[in-house]
Image (cartoon, rainbow, N blue to C red; front, side, top):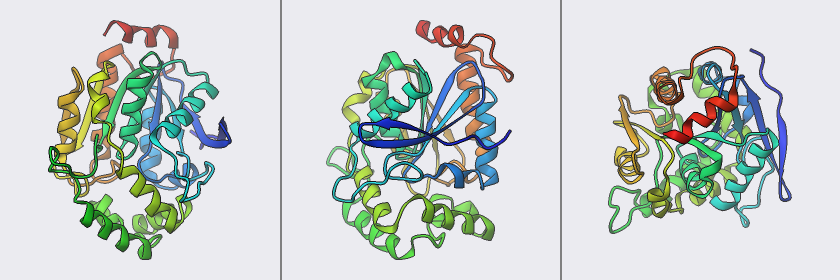
Length: 299
């Protein structure tokens, strides 16, 4: 499978980069975490393998969120809100002709997908959330969140080392001694965002709170979280699953935050199993995309 071409969807005055691959019976849009770069991602064999596997049972839509990768960059004084990025996602789905899609939100992409599922249930086939949170920072009734002072300290230590691959120790510790992976990760960082933008976007991503929308999500939902996630406490995942009606929760082994670390196949397998159980997704070309999508309405 060749690397898919990059296209752009217009969302207001911004251009949002996306790729499409696969011809499965359902649409699956992958909303990445904090940073991304559509082309550099394909240079990493682990990610390329994951993309191809997901595209073997879906029409996979990959995006760079506003402010990162190949999408239009933003000023640190005018950062996008969750609502802005939700409309960006809406524009991409319109551009590819997707009337209903499975939303797959990784890490910081999770709150965006949860908000979209609650706001546009008619456009949402199902929801998958991995390694994410409904609220990132600690609150009186949410004591497992990040301590604001410790988080600011983390941001201060991140900026001077941006682009050298040091963040692998946090996001994918099992690969921290893999020199080739760390070199790729450093390039991924540099291409995805500048140091200042990376810090500003992560701070923005941690300020949101979508706990109030969880009870309004009624689409089939799968929540995945690694038991010893080195960056996002597993209680975040458990909270999401407990507050979305009927959500399925799967706790995976390992301590890597990003799914490309550790047993990536286990993550992809859980997604395939979830979708297979709901609509009978099987590997191979689709014969009836509409019929397969409509089956979700009875779940």
